[in-house]
View (tube, rainbow, N blue to C red):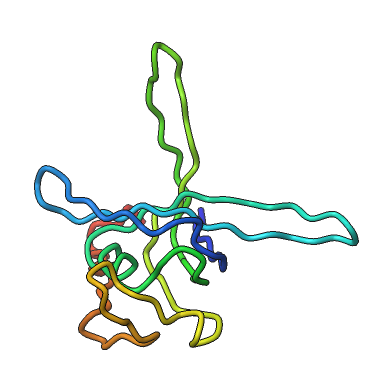
Length: 137
């Protein structure tokens, strides 16, 4: 089955970068977009999670209100809260890209430095390719 989603939207807040107990970087953020049909507008929001280099890239170059294009896989995360089972759908981001005007992409990093809308290839880290020898088909 195919599970690929591409969304263009704006960040609802600054991305939050943290590390797991084993030291792996993980970045969480929400994006919003809207769809219009005649006078009706539907606003949509999606929680996104980016791991390792992709998460560090998003945290370094994107801020609240900026446009972003994300590609990844949808998944359901479940947990229990005060005895109630909860779940949410989130996008596990495999790739994040700049979009929109260059002026809207320039932002200040948390350290106060200015970031341009382009990154060098060394700063953009993709997930490693899967080993095709382990596929069941």
